[in-house]
Structures are given as structure tokens and as C-alpha cells.
Amino acid sequence: DTAVSQTPKYLVTQMGNDKSIKCEQNLGHDTMYWYKQDSKKFLKIMFSYNNKELIINETVPNRFSPKSPDKAHLNLHINSLELGDSAVYFCASSRTGAGVETQYFGPGTRLLVL
Amino acid sequence: GEDVEQSLFLSVREGDSSVINCTYTDSSSTYLYWYKQEPGAGLQLLTYIFSNMDMKQDQRLTVLLNKKDKHLSLRIADTQTGDSAIYFCAETPGSGGYQKVTFGTGTKLQVIP
Image (cartoon, rainbow over all chains, first blue to last red):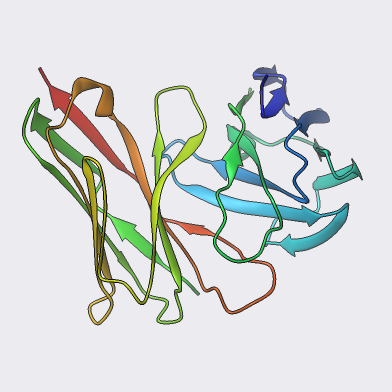
């Protein structure tokens, strides 16, 4: 069984469009994350939710809006896509979000904005 | 803010040891991690070390921590072609509450058969 899954795996779209990426974890974890990995493989946290509540919100444009309908899901909606949004977006989860914990990563969503 | 730096690339021959280095700036770092990212995949935790330790060994992996110099290294003994991947150093302050993990820039390890 896949622990952390993301859909879609690949997303190619035009500038200005709105798109969503979905993430689900079946590990029973309380905390979920979105990371962005750029073309140089630099990985940066965007958001984190614990039990559907936002706990980490890095400096991310307002065009990015995470939504957590329940603690097993954390979706990312992006409005008015720009060329610079092209990256690989990783969802991750951890048991509580505190202390030393393994973060379990999804396979990534490769977004290409044309 | 926190900064975690790594060299970008390392090439070794199969069977040799690999040493991947990392430096960090946050003196309150409490937990330090090594993650591995294989091509086209997400990150997987390899090992971690608490800041009150200076060494941790786990099979072929040895982690060394020099807290004074804020330097972390990962040694892979008898490196295999399956070890080819990008390795990320990461840290959390561990000051309580929810933790933000700061990842390094990643080191791409190439193992030559």
C-alpha cells in the first residue's frame, strides 16, 4: 500500500491557468507538508498542517492555497500559474510534527508551466 | 534564518568509501538528518543524530557531528551503484512544538562501476 500518494504525477499547463495537486496519506499521521523542489534540487518547505490546522506557512505567494479537508489529505491549489512555478512538488507526512520524526514523502508532482 | 550547505557533487568508485559533508548555521539545531532521494522519487530518511552525540553508526553508514564547527558528515562504506542518489542533510531546532525541517542543497553521489 502506498503510504503517501500524490496526483497527478505530471502536470503540464499554460501560464495563467489554475491547477490543483492532491495528496493523501494512509499512515494515520497528524501532520502533512508541502515542499517545492526547484530545478537545482533545492527543497524548501511551503506549508504544514496538523490535524487540518495550518502550523507552518513560509513566504509563499497568495496564489498558493493549501486545503486540508481532513488530516489524511492536504491539497494544494495554485492560481494564475507562472513560469517560475515549474518545479517538483512533494507532499510529506509525519506522526505528530514535533521532535525527531521521520517525514514520509510522496513520489512528487512534476509541474511544468509553459 | 537557517542555512544548510552541501557540496553539489561527489563521484566515487564502487567499493570505495563516500563522505558527504554538510555545514549548518543554526546553533540551536537539535536533530540532524540524512535523507536519500533516488531519481524520480521522493526523499527517504536514512539516519538521524541528536546534537548531544558526535557519532552514530548504522551498518554501512557512519554519521559524524562536530557541533563546534556545525559540521555534519555521512560516510558510506563499500559504496555500491545502488547508492547513486542525491543526499540531503537536514536539521530541526528541536526547541519544542512543531518542527520545521530545513534541508540542505543536496549532494549528488555518482558511483562508478
